Length: 61
Image (cartoon, rainbow, N blue to C red; front, side):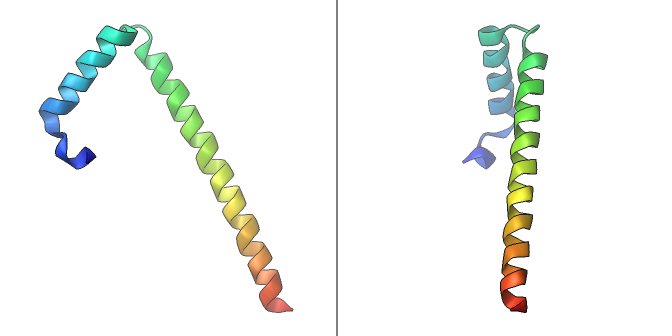
């Protein structure tokens, strides 16, 4: 779905975001989204490592 947007669609989305949130708020919003994704990725990787360690322990028994 997102691959069908193209350059004109991205430009339109940026214009809508600037109008809706204002140009001054966009960096703060982007920073917040980036930090949230970073935290989610870290938690996901920690959980995956825990599951891998648990499965390795079970295989070793």
